[in-house]
Image (cartoon, rainbow, N blue to C red; front, side, top):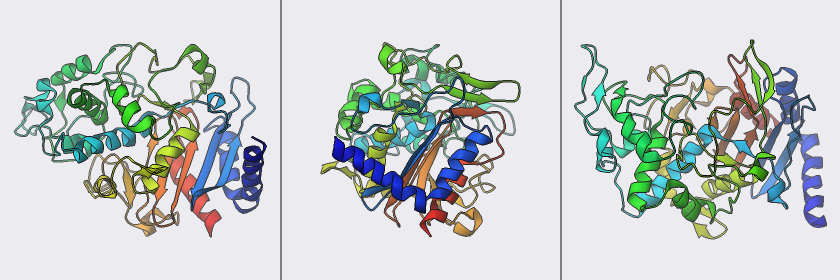
Length: 396
């Protein structure tokens, strides 16, 4: 244990001299009331080259604990849409085993999604195309997010649902934004994929993830629920909407109850920095972790292939991701000049609703993770972009 503690202290000592830009970025987020306590790490060439916890020490906040030699003491974060790449990898496992095809109609597994209605210039009409598996992976199904103010309202709601079968059955009432496969529109697609995986594997989605991903990746803290003891390690939400500002546990938009099996693959996972770093190590290592093959490099190549362009070519794409294109619920950097952060061409990653971020850099054999728990109605900073800017400035 002394050796591990020394290593962590050594990593921090070299980080603050070379990577002070990242630490200053973390401090600015707190000073500008964008996040509360936050933690960042950078992993390169098989070692952690930067790690820093920046606690706010504000009333109502909680200090982040990251003790990799005692995982049961590590802070738990809701990772929201950083659940999506995990669901994508789970889908790739089935694809590699020949249990599904990208061109399968989703109605093969969820019959209620066979005869969907689409928005058209002439009004709502029965869709000509069926939703396919690839449409869900690439957010080209026509499903969006529904309800206000956050993702947890509407359909992906563990108060309304306690299983994925009822959830997906109710989606038949939705009018799709457009003809499936024709455009990009960010939505509840990975939550639907969770139900597909249940039907194909004859397991709950969480059982499949635990067996095929979490156990081999040693992600013992990543799950859809919190026990009473684990809730003590759950980071409070810092909310700053103008009308509301402060730290709270009262605005949890998912219940995280242990007996609830509405395992939403696009929104619902809890994780830790240590756990998610293992997931990133697997991706960086071509789909393998500690000698255990999860998926192939070919699957990663498929996940990061251009399936949709960026804004304005895709009218519903994220206006903050100029210079990127979209893979399977991943952004991939194509034009470094437009992005302007000195990030490597070909980096890929994703972000979460409560200000969590990661990306993989195959060129530099590196990944980076930022975790916090915060929500703003309007933010004057693109946290993910500025995190990348700080990291690559430090690497020069």
